[in-house]
Image (cartoon, rainbow, N blue to C red; front, side):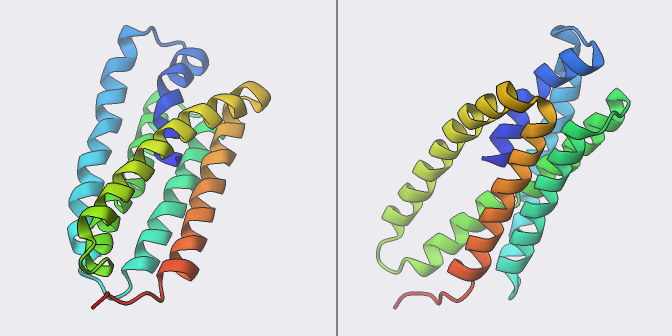
Length: 170
């Protein structure tokens, strides 16, 4: 949700807060999009770690904090882009890592686990954009930052206390 909450409103933020035209948001958004590739690439190393749940939880909260800083502080446009890039990078470590973990712990139900993960990803996209829009309407861009931090903190808690003790199925 935090990724979609961050990315769904970044162009509007650049337009409203930094005065960029729609066309001038293309380069900053492309740069921020590179974070998806970097984060996904980092996931291979994270997946092999013994403390991968902790690492993903830390990266998720760091991404939430980056969203909070992004939408709450008055920064120059390129500082905003750098913070957004950092945030999308660390938030995107989770998806490939969760994919690997889900196939590991699901035993003979790997296809079901991967399907459920894909479905939850799409629901997160819907929820992140929809709830982010409601939060934006109620509290402005800084409220979106707090929303992103809150959902990453909840995700980290679930990951650490709900998933961290699981072992692979037989």
